[in-house]
Figure 1 (tube, helix red, strand yellow):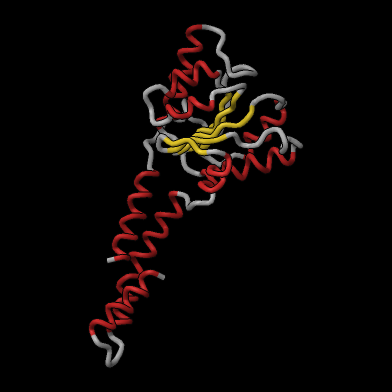
Figure 2 (cartoon, rainbow, N blue to C red):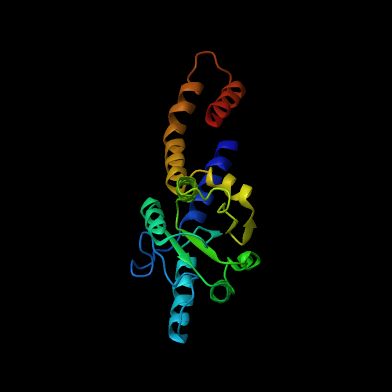
Amino acid sequence: MKQSLFVLGLAATASAFTSPAIPSTLRPDTALFGGARGGATTLTGKTETVTIVKELLDSSEMIITVPASGIKVSQMQTLRRSLPEGTTVKVVKNKLMSRAIEGTDYQAAGEMLQGANMWFFIEEDIGGTVKSWNAFVKGAGLGETHSILGGTIEGINYDPEGVKTISTLPSKKELIGQIAGAIKAVPTKVARVIKAPGMKVARAIKLAGEELEK
């Protein structure tokens, strides 16, 4: 029973991590949009920015924000090349970000709209994105001024330590692998325990459960 609940829990988690695909024109592997402060210069440009951000939010598992000021164009190119596939980095003006997150699961992120922010829209690989950012700021000598400010997932804001903890959790692909492995292992482990000579039913069930929990 415990193993069944465990497998179902993993399946539910993997399902929660699954997000709808987004056209490549809206979510390149990595991208930067807007001016130095993420501001569109025309009404049409602002409207398009909000639309694009909403599309990114729809397909993101998590968003993370970091300081945007003081980063050179050449450094940004280095950062873009280091990010995992499916992660988009975008400088967004706070007013436009506020419009984009309104009514979405990321509305709570409004509490972090202070100063010049750069956002990571993460489709799946949270751990890889955080690792890339940390390596980037270390190499650029920005570690003391450009730490992660926070992140939002499933309507909840997390501080830097919370983001760090989440980044260590299994990715969607890893969860699927764990589920597949657990399901494949169940018949073999149960059969091995139950077929043990002289084994009483109650004892066999107990040992089978312990095997499945490993």
